Amino acid sequence: MKFANVRTPIPGPEGEKLIGKWHEFEADVVGYQAPVVWKKAEGCVVEDVDGNTYIDWTSGVLVTNVGHCHPRLVEAANKASTELLNNYECANTYRIEAAERLVGALPDHLDRCFFLTTGSEAVEASLRLAKRKTGKFEILGFAGGFHGRTFGAASAGGMDGPKRRYGPSLPGTIRAPYPNPYRDPLGFCRGGKDFARYFTYLDDVVKANSTGSLAAVIVEPYQGASGFVFPPEGWLKKLELWAHERGLLFVLDEVQSSYGRTGKMWAMEHEELEPDIVALGKGIGSGVPVSAVCSNAAIFSCLNKGEMSSTLGGNPVASAGVTAVLDIFENEPLIENAAELGKSMKKELSRIAEKCPYLGDVRGMGMVMGLEFVRDKNDKQPAPELIRPVIDACAEKGLLVGAVGMFGNVIRVAPPLVMNKEQADESLGIMESVLTNIGL
Image (cartoon, rainbow, N blue to C red; front, side, top):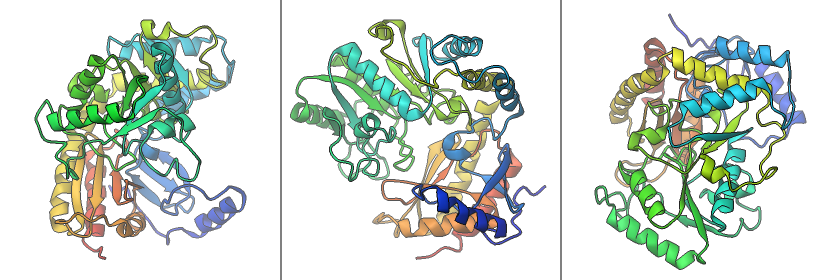
């Protein structure tokens, strides 16, 4: 069975008309995507308004982990929406069940959660909670980090896009390098479990920049927006120990790394991390807008009544989605599939890289990988000029991909976790046919 079937130019006649209408009314300020107008989607397959079908490697930016429009999720959201749409801070049965289920699914040291709407909002809440608990105001983040586009989240992040030309960031942000095994001129990825060179440098960064009011460290298990950069094994655990030895809270941004994406339910499981605060989003609702900040009762106890709230956080429809997604993970082998199929896809992509002179690095785990394009594999000079041609050529053949990266030179590989081997093989075939024909 063939899943991808593109019968018209991209965009097709109906799609071209609708894109023109879209830009007539809504500001054209989003990132570059293949010019495809989505109509409906199921599992890993997207259909556009011209009847073309595509295999999806985006998951709507790592959101639809359980697949597009999973019947159980759709049913739960539909049912809740017929009963109650919003009730602000009042309790509702869906919210109570969702909180109980989420805490039950989290690692044991996390026994409280609070529901919000977006990943940025969850990060903002995490930083507020850390500052409130410690009574300090400085946050240590990392170059290349992306935590959202609101001011606190963007300030803690280390990418220029969310901050450029928006005036000064929030005061109290300290930023350190994030170790990148593919680009490591200073040797920060070396040193085994101690990473002595890196953490000596980190101490120097804090000493030079802190006023003595450092509250917390915030970090992603892998840096998604900067190009799916995975740190060397053991570095995250060392960072956690480093933070706790200095009396800092350890905040983990799992907005895009959780819900099976890395081959485990939570990315923190890979190194047995025990973060003090965790931000969740994206996969928690798998298309239903919801996020959460998670911690423990002792840390949340620093807040008085009314110090944390959200107009739409914990609404019945979103809460029903939280529970439905957890039901799906309990009843379907999505995590196992992400680990096993992701491993075989990475192996195949590495084989393809050997044939493509511009695919410099294939990295990742589970169902989240980055393909970094360079002009030359020896000097690793970024090749962002290849990305749009790859996106467009893939779409023309029936594969939807997107771009990320500090240099804009990385293609994301992040399909829904329900992808099967036939869909994987067909999509890998499309990618190989595209990469064997690209050139500078």
